[in-house]
Image 1 (cartoon, rainbow, N blue to C red):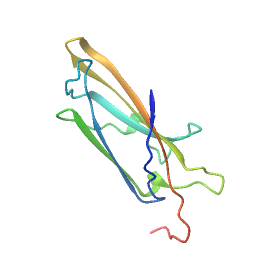
Image 2: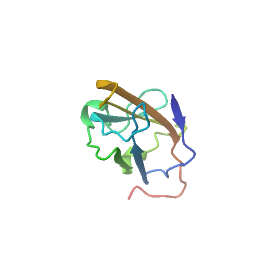
Image 3: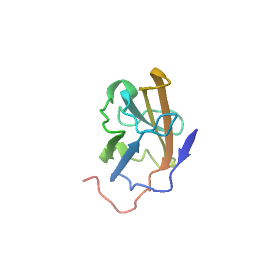
Image 4: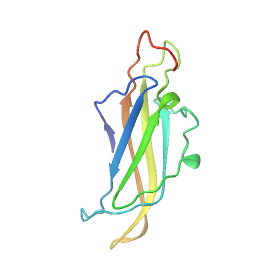
Length: 118
């Protein structure tokens, strides 16, 4: 299921995604082979942030990803700022080994007027 968050990171600013993972019994689980990607709502990858290039580690049932600068860029006047942050990986639990973990969240980048690209 896709989740929509109400926080709107500012254009070219910073957004921090803090994630925690639970197994089917509600216990903390540390994923393996965890990757993420960032897309516009039409499926276009933003700032080369595709699954293949964005693995990261998780520990103690949690993980953190920081998006900043060009990750939160706007692409012309027609860009509505809608973005999709997706994760995929695997986890092990009493239910099995190598179980798939997939999720995504929708959010909107807030366009700023009068800002420079610094």
